[in-house]
Image (tube, rainbow, N blue to C red; front, side):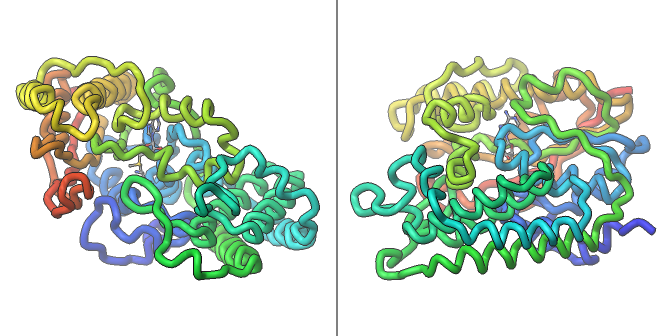
Length: 421
Ligand SMILES: C[S@@+](CC[C@H](N)C(=O)[O-])C[C@H]1O[C@@H](n2cnc3c(N)ncnc32)[C@H](O)[C@@H]1O
């Protein structure tokens, strides 16, 4: 008997299918809290409402793997793309099959081997100086005792012979890093916890958090092993370059929004601590490979695509307001955002079965009082590219970023497109 989709989502009722929909409470989704995930119920709905049977589905912006993992419960073979290597591992850790007993045995080995801390801290020598005590200017993310335990766990995990087990345990260790650190990650970056200097955290809290997370994950894996589809295709890389071939009956995704939110920043602690990044060059290359949705680095931005009067007006207004914007590159970034996204949508169109749908969830933005109605702009550009616009569905309002006044005003919208027959 297959484990049903509803068994995973526990038949819950949720206020919104959009992001921040409480997905963290579900098994697997709590491995690393991922605030920007949409509800798995959206995937179920897209498959159910598709005009054609869905056997294969694509998500070019995998994130925490909601689309791909939900597809496995629904009997749909998922293809997903993710550029961030920590998130790609998080996705693959969820989609893989395991022998739960073998995992439990390896967890025992980790416990034994992580007792040895000798030389473990050496592996953290490549980290930026803010990471480990004594840090820089009296600030550091991890106390020395905590960093030593993390390093010892990493050494123990890397000594395991099974690469799937290594990936899973590394991801789970990644999932507890912020909890044992002196920072919180909110909005677009991280900040120090209030009163962190006065609070001492026992190194053993790493052990406690890691083993609790690992035991829960092994429980999830055991309970939900019998999913209808166990295959998957994970493409690690930049969606703008890698989806040139493939056939899908459905594409469902939520790209980064044009709100200067850089996922490389949000997952920076995991990327460095777990060894995915080891130099500032690697950090820059990763930022360059992400969608043009932020201005964290200088790079060349593609010109805005033609075909939307609304986008033309936004561009003209942003260019006029350039000197008032908190970064003068914002107009170029916004133009390139829509160019990037439309190039991806065009590529998906080439691989989508006739009658297949493309659903995407996107949020509006605002700079210097100039609204960017992302959903309407994408809808208009897609219609010009011969997609049939089936409709928009508002999901919720997002808060404006602190730079923009912090008021709850911005819409998040589901856009439903269909490939013309
Ligand atoms: C809004 S999140 C997706 C969340 C996902 N729907 C979920 O439920 O977990 C967008 C994701 O796109 C990824 N991303 C950004 N630029 C990318 C690119 N060029 N290629 C592939 N993935 C990219 C980010 O790392 C982030 O994980």
